[in-house]
Length: 282
Image (cartoon, rainbow, N blue to C red; front, side, top):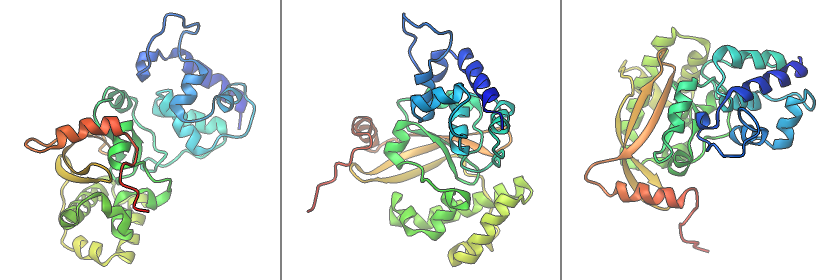
């Protein structure tokens, strides 16, 4: 662990980023060539005081989650991301986990979609990063690790995970999840992460086991979905995908379905945000 070198490296990466690179305005009175410390802290979701301590090489050893957030905030390459983990004395996370590296190009595209719900997920349906409208539409990514971070796992083991879709659509989503997972498993060559996920699902879910035996395979690319929002009701959307070159990550964005009320609903979503407007029945 070398926190002094980590601080110097973080500062060097901060200095090279222009505010427009991360969706921030360029003010007339900026005194630094890149981002300010408070801007990096805001982008990473940590306190300014803590980030200042990190750049000074002092303070507590940063967690894997903090390092992942800093890598995304500073638009680090994969090699640079690995470097800060080594300097911090933390193991480099696996490619498909919740702390997986997000390609800077996908983060750039995500930042250019402020008026559209969008998020980056892995091929095992682990949410890596969301914009504000995606959080408002789908809810925040759960604070879980390991296989429980996968929506596929929660779909077949936790009934609460299914409330985002109408009950009439559950069977279709189950089939699609399983077919997509089979494609991911073949592409990954049966690595430890996907093998553990499949093994646990076979153990815990009869529904998954029956669908898995059918050998259906199909990569999930474009879908028409109905999403249940707690305040706005059922919203019909098109879910579009941009897949990374190695197939392990996807940028998803949601557009209104033609011929439905979803145009007005998504416009209202931008106003409502994450507020809960359902009546208080007490």
